[in-house]
Image (cartoon, rainbow, N blue to C red; front, top):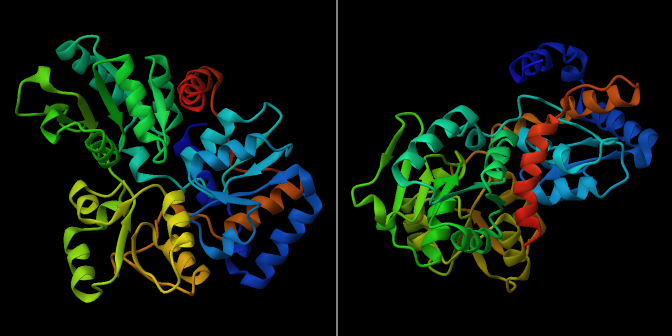
Length: 366
């Protein structure tokens, strides 16, 4: 069954009565399933999930962190409260007798979807024709299993926002150039921090299938895939300027998926974990404008009442695809497991899994 067919099935088959239940009844169903399944069930919850979903998570964290935690449990059933590529990574890293489920198959990632395998293979053919065997592919973990497998096949590695500098340094020890998928902003910000001038970075447009670069091709060090996070790209220079005007004592901290000019104007930039740890360790009474997903910002506000925290963009909405995971879908998924009729299992074929594992292990073994 294709992913599209799975999605259509998911949308059409969720029983209406789950959507009509009040929160108290949904909570009861979820807790009952957790109690009955016991140690056979593990629920990882990504930081960007809603509070009512996070409340039932056995662990919360970033995508790779949660996938690794899932694989290290003895649980037979892993119900991943995140998005599709995260569940794929959990399936890749977990044992054969562990099964991964996504409560709503519509929970995708716009960034991951900006680099499909057919586009990537065509781009690789064109780029290697132009630049020869000088390029190493790298992919952010926010990518599909097929893209991770592509990178693994050609000797590259995955990266997280936490270890991107380390992995990019390693990549330059292997080849002269890097093709960085699928988020151009993380790639650009990291390369710049490593001392690579912006004029040595090109952008590959997968729609037009052209390399955007004005200089001598021999000067290219990093080829950035033209992809982005639809949440983090909505933080802007005017947002930073407004905070500077209205809150002169406020520090601005953003995720490196934000545009280069936003990162440049901010006081700090780092992964989700870095943002959380920085806020938690900040002095009492300190002031922060945070440029990341709204569910997390709201949670940080609630969990740090001793600090003045706002979103860098006051009009920011939560990640729409991440928020596909809600209590009705979680209750449906867990209730189905409890009855022995599992739904929405995520599986990655063995060939793809093997090559994707190679890319992941090159990172994990550094």
